[in-house]
Length: 270
Figure 1 (cartoon, rainbow, N blue to C red):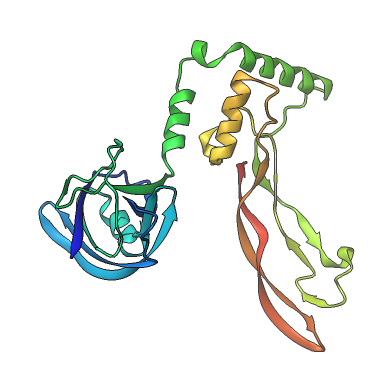
Figure 2: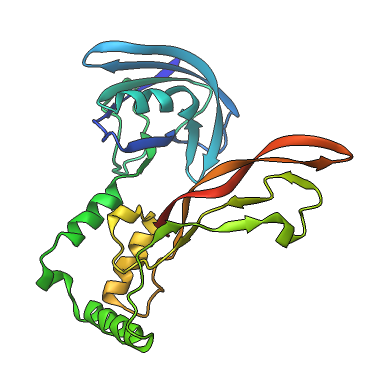
């Protein structure tokens, strides 16, 4: 015999990626099985797109038995971006207690009276960037708060003390590395000198989207808007690195190897 649960997963944005899917069942601690048989039927617009059965591990988290469904359906949800119905049948080798707690993603229909939750852990790479863009598009009166004006005044004063030289924005520049200077010239045959590139310049706060800031850098910039001393400005660093092919001596033999992350290829604010 199987307990059957149905869940509706609404449409997800293209940027949103599912990391983990859990079925949580309110359980009786006196009877817990380590593994359980699971059957899946997944439909989209009334048409079946997956039928599958497997044995899944069962973990205990507080009052719930947790069945990890990620291996089977995570990639499928990412491909179709939600808007599907998931029917999960669990073999009755776990005894459960009913629960009246109201939770999101409660099953849509069930042939049993047991409480079940489908928990989806996702990452939306575009969400914070969209919110950040909205804040940056605010009119100047809203955006230039007192704290931001304080930052700008401090930067202007700093620039005046440095001979009024205008510092360049974050960018890629040439940077020659000489292996002879490092003391490695005796065993590195080629190249003796190469352009490793380097990232230099200023990351202004708030940092511009063209510098591909990380979520952390965006939050750092936003905190500085409200509290100038809350965090330092983001730093100009390599965001993409290329490998370099080296010809050198190794145990009396000449070898050629490709070494990763040797040459800066692009810069951003982090």
